Image: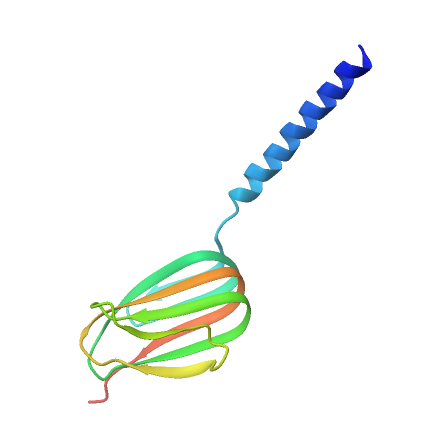
Length: 131
């Protein structure tokens, strides 16, 4: 076997190996951790997250949402929107880790999380209207 053929075979082998590695890592899960979606809460305990996730809550006027960001690394962004598209909150929890969001009207509210190389935890829990 000539030296040229050997180099060609080694090159092809390396190409196949690198292609396999690229396919393996491109199929890595977008979320690793624990995700709980209840009728009154959205809880994320994130070991690693890339991409988006969302949850909807049916809320009543004067309910509140208790929001808590903890030990966030990477980029983690939460957006809370009413069914008409109005944004009630949009942020990353860096200026305030614990806060409440007041619910102005009865309706379905969408909680959307966008993450890039994120880890940490995020909890959003409904505080019912006091009767």
